[in-house]
Length: 376
Image (tube, rainbow, N blue to C red; front, side, top):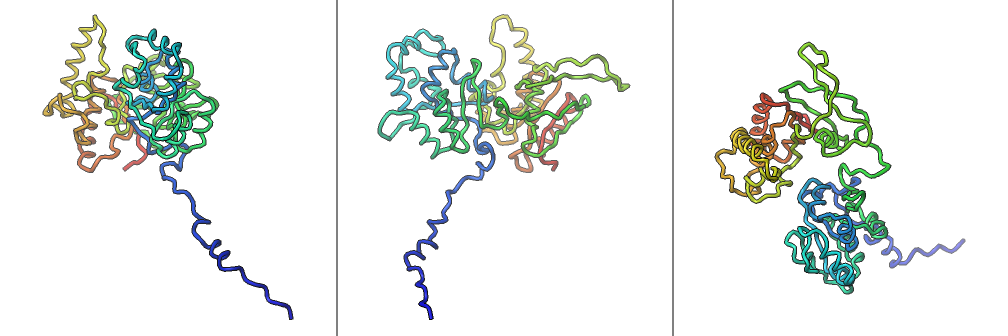
């Protein structure tokens, strides 16, 4: 009769059943997709040293160019490591700063540290190597966009899920790993659409699941993005159903767009400044300003904001009134087509009812096109 085999020792069995052997890192549900769905405006952009250098070479204002890229308020963040690397660049870089556009920089070398638009982030670690500092920071806190032109740093950032990358291409900023971001070689978001029709002074609805390209289509119609292929035109029809004339381009100035959660895109400190933020400031446009001022009074009354002081902070308004303000900003321009992206998102039942009643009144004066993923 053979000898029985010895069972594994207790320490070995303990090592097998311990929770440490099967422990998995906890990941936010916002990172289950190809981008961080929890990331929204106002955006905080972590700026690398070479990104500042290339921005100066391309004569780009950091904050303005970021807002042109993301269509939202952006706050450039400068770490102590980046400031230390800037100081090491020497006299040649000081000259570049001093001769650059006077409205962007001053003769002071530390203009970045003192610019109130930028946020300074202190570093508590040893050393001044900015790349390691940026990688460690975004690994722990995925609330930043990393702005860099360094190929090696971009390679390291791409290994971290949920961190978008901003870089410079063709003398402007571009973004990757963001919703609706376009990178060379990717498949088009909207490639199947030939035409769709909306009647004058009516209420149109674009319905589709998340990621189907609804927001991309809106940005194309509003002129905020250019199609990678094909073109966008408008064909007008008469009452008899026959075309009035040949298709013509859709002028962006005749299209108003209200994004999802438009309150995130407010940049002014008063309601009045928010409404007139995009008004012309050139001499000789007095007639245009007078027309816009008249439209302002109509729009404020139209959306029901005439009982609120125009000096009030727009961020202090309730959710429903923030949507009303966003509509008033677009109605001042008197668009032929008003586009709304998820206008009821994040509102309670009363605010939803108020916005729906307002939209019913709007369709009597202009054409309204609404995008939603929920028919309810």
